[in-house]
Picture 1 (cartoon, rainbow, N blue to C red):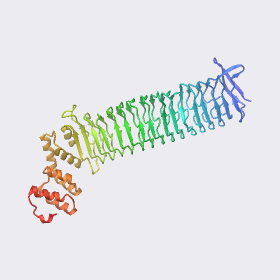
Picture 2: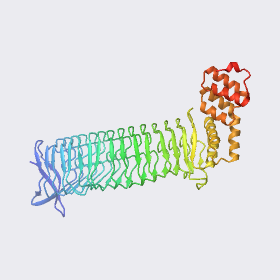
Picture 3: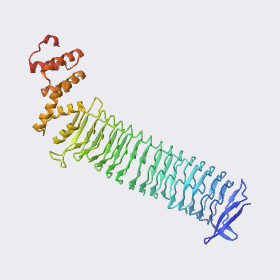
Picture 4: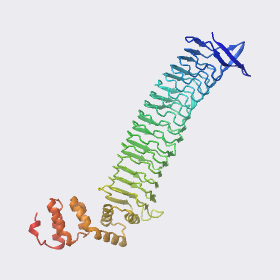
Length: 506
């Protein structure tokens, strides 16, 4: 037979200690002692008790901290509809508890109330307007779901973190906020659902980070703010639908999402914070809505499958925004961009083109300015062209001065001379003088690579010098290059017949 100690307060009795519980006993907590109503179970009152089943009666309003903690044999628990509060660590470490229903009256489940209940496989919420405190269900390894969070308003920091076998979670329309790390390290979590009419407004930091099995997510349109690292390290995430109701995509939102292939940043979002899409190696396409005006540093760093970017609406591109995007080939830049941050396209070895979108000769705000190391270093393929949709010659001159790699400067100078709309005589003279200065070096490289297109452009501009022409023909003929015929015809038409024509006859 159990013996109870208690204290008296204004609301009724509080059980403070119990003894004499049989290991196999079903413990019926009394609703009255000495004729007085029991209203609460006090701190550590049943700590480490050996009962297998506990029934808490109607009329009890509060279960205080540690009340049933470390009840290692407890397998079944019945809580009353009158219960309003479950205190910190109230059932912590009840590792054989199998099933739990949170009743209607509960308003608060405090910190670590059911943490380390490793055997808990079924969890039901029948409450209204309840808050789940920090780490309330932390490390409940047996919990698999589907878990319906019905009647819950706030889910606080790490409430369900490290529930490693939880597979499915549904958020009822009452849920308003998810705290930091709320579902972090739920390795088996595959599906997240939000009921129609969802009222979710806030996501804290790292809410779903390291949910390694999560594949697709559609966040509700009611969302107003998203924390740092929401889906960080979600290695199987392939698609995520973002609402336009948020204004900023925070730092590391999709960092290290190894399977993410496509993403759309919707209208309404104005800024991508640092490392937003950092290290997404399968990301091949990103559509940025016109509302996106700012890309922070390292926003797309190490997105090694990204090929084309339309940045025509973006105004600010911060340092290293696209560094180490190894397959990035072309970008389109807005006329409203007035500067590209240091190293914003550094180590983009496959880049071969940049479109400068321009509205006319004077788009306003002055010419585009580039940091010296925006595009360098390049792999040998290098930057092949920089073209403008419109008339913006000053930007070309500025870019030409900033570019340091020889092949990039040569290709840009050639393109400007052959597409000379809006090119001033001063700029023409500058580009021509540079190409004359380095023409021998350009031609040696072009012949070695058998680059007929480049050789043709040099020929059109009369930049293949007579004193070196025979050497180019000889080198091309020895290598069996396709450009040999062009060089022979060019030599004949521009400088007369070859002195040793028979030697170079096709």
